[in-house]
Amino acid sequence: MSKSEEQDERGEGDALLDLLARGTELTRQLVDETARLRQRIAEGASSGHDSATRHDQQLALGEWIAKIDALQRENRSLLEQLRSVEASNQRWAERHAEIEERHNELANLYVASYQLHATFDPDEVIAAISEIVINLIGAEVFALYSCNPGNGCLTPVACEGRPLSSFSTLTVGSGLIGEAVVNRTVYIAEPGAVTVEGEPVVVIPLHVRDCALGAIALYKLLDQKAELSELDHQLFGLLASHAATALVCSSWVPASMPTPGSNPGWIDRVTN
Image (cartoon, rainbow, N blue to C red; front, side, top):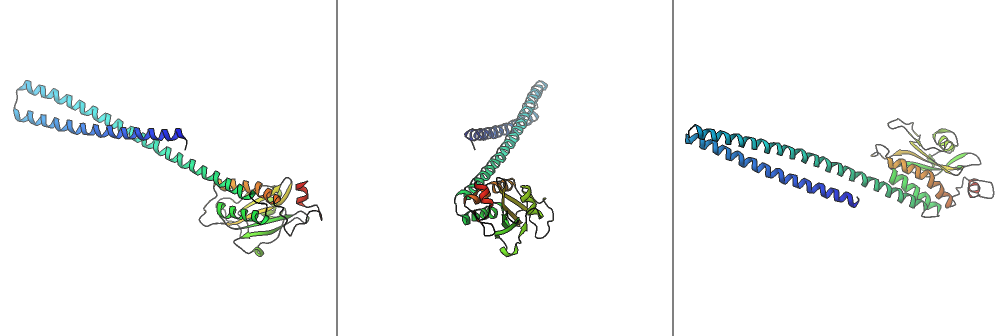
């Protein structure tokens, strides 16, 4: 929160305390005036004064009633101001919580980006991708596929939640994962839609320039994750761009892919 926002909050708090003090004082005056008026009426009733005296008492009574009415109106006005200040404080609290949430999202994005580019070891890059997918996005089952440009296959090379052998080799352009790689767009299943068993709920294609590196497929989210947040969508975009670059920088060459020099593969095209 900025310094000006903190000063505004302190000002709102001082105004609230002032309103409470004024309301308390008005209430005290109202009670005192009511008690004094009752005493005057009782004294007039018991003294048996003449008509002139009673007339003076009636005038005084009218003045006291008018004063009480004025005090009640001012008290109602202060109560309305108090409610307005309380509503303003509530808005400030909601705004503060929203800013804190945005700060946390930015911090998580920074940490995720740093983790991807903090090493040139391919195993550590894959571990960083796994940590982002598991801890920040909240996936329970996912797989990382590498793309072989020679035969157009997507081969699972890393996973979480199930044995690697349970994930099949796929074809570029076929199925949700293959189509996402060809279209170079993140696939996200419709909220609340019943997905086919074995089909992913999110597919993040990995590209560098015009070269398809592979894809990250999320098959199951954690049970407590009811829906995807704005931060999740930002992380999908971050992985789509930065994960592929980090893998190239780490000279990631899966066993299913040709080595540079033996056959013009993805790494030759990326580095040229």
